[in-house]
Image 1 (cartoon, rainbow, N blue to C red):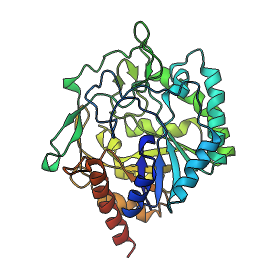
Image 2 (image 1 turned 180 degrees about the vertical axis):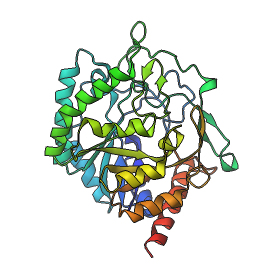
Image 3 (image 1 turned 120 degrees about the horizontal axis):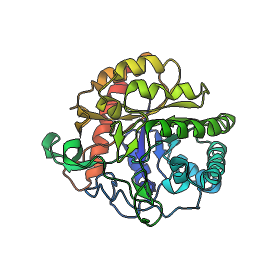
Image 4 (image 1 turned 30 degrees about the vertical axis):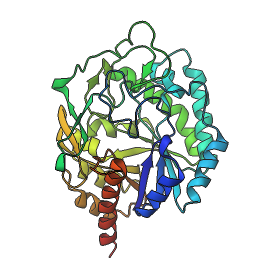
Length: 354
């Protein structure tokens, strides 16, 4: 097991690499998406109808030189760049929407995956969804009234349509007139299948593993769009598309625990021996859809020590990062929350290694 830290683009700097090293992390999972609007943690937004913000990167793909420079900068701090997490919605919106620029964007994505491999980055995480992560509200009901988020389907309009110009809960261009038409689960599955049939050979050739994030929140339909991975049995269907070694799971423990169907521990026991799990979002929740709350890593429904023991049993060699950690009441709320989670994780890893 390797201890890592996930950083958004605005946080990819020397200070936070130093923080990661001090907290015991050895690896970084980087998000390269720009969020125009929002603060240090763009997921903690009350403005859930309007999304996280706007991406300014339409027709501006990530360059090989930039990927290599980022890797070298991270390595200069004694850390390793394990993965890029999430494609920018402005790079693949018509792949998700089956729109007129789909074929052009497919070619751009093939080049992106190739460049990630050339840059020496082994894993690419993605989330194939129209609504994306959506519907949370801010609460202060974790331990000690720590700020975190809650999903309560009874408090929101789960059928609120997605405006044109938005996908994955972000705007890739100015909103047009009207809203997106409804899309079924079957249509979304066909789009995902086409995407992977085209991308997996490129990933395999370039030594990159593509790992899919489950739907968070795991509602079968959200904003009039079908959701692909809302139960563990549906998540497992990913491997029906291809048995390529580059096809795998981005295991978000909290999201799987939020699902009504399936068992997180059994899922791990099944797929760890098959080397199908990329990096892991190590987070905890209380409750399941349609109502759950994100909490500190040691106060939720998942037994995280048991999770670590399963990882140790199967000699898991991937990276674990804390995710969606409640903030703490101090001068550096996000950093303190992450430091707490990293310390908890590091302590268990060290105890299991003795």
